[in-house]
Image (cartoon, rainbow, N blue to C red):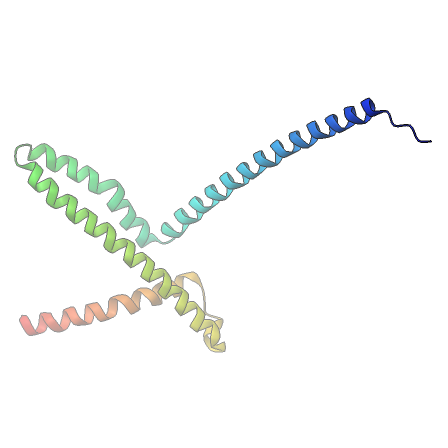
Amino acid sequence: MLRIDWKKVTSQVEKMADIVNEQWIQVQHLEQALHMTEMRAFNIQRKLRVTGCTFLKFVNGVSEKHLPKLLGILDSYFSGGGSTLRSYVSKAEQQFKRFFSGFKKFHHELQGLIRQEMEKNELTAALVNKELVFFVASALITLPILTAWMLLSSKLG
């Protein structure tokens, strides 16, 4: 007949339960660390996308660094009537940020489309690189605007 020592079994079960609890806590810590690492990586990727090209660096620098300095200088000169001026400049700044955000999104989408189309053609597939794709996307956006500007200038001038 098999004799079971219940105290020994109970003790082993309690030890195993403690080990399982400790491992569960470690798993939760690892999941939190993974989540934090993913968030940091996402933020770094987002910053790299925004600051990848020189033009976007310039516009970001203007909107984030120089515009607040300019507003501070304007406030010091127009302390009495500056609140009205400040509200106009603030609205213009918000509109500029919305425009620039939309422009960046459209520009990135256009770059993806250009890259995809260039890779389909065997002649242009060898030419595909980040700089060329950026230049072509920029040209596709700016050339129609410049052409319209020149036509309007010649008609009005």
